[in-house]
Image (tube, rainbow, N blue to C red; front, top):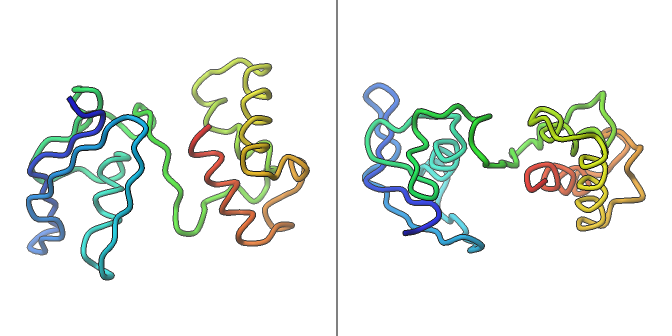
Length: 149
């Protein structure tokens, strides 16, 4: 059984069909890329996996469990948005820690995990900075750290 499986996924917005019979299996630890022209449904598929969109038809499972009835915050999925979606009034540390706090993780564990993530993206020296004090590439790395934390 695949870690993530999409079977016969379809998505329509009214009369506009944006995803047609999409199938995919991803094993745990596997990395993939979506390539295609603008408007072909790449972002829509990712939004369905994360729970921000609901498939019109088909099944979407993680570890064999149907994800369709779950809200985005009930899924163990991180997503980096094109515009990064960092909180401008929070430091780098607090941006990475945000989802962990919402999930109810203990503060010492949060601090340890954030430190690990910032070291991984090589921005541990910028933990007290705000997003506006960083380059676009640095902001993107912070968004990635938050998604994988």
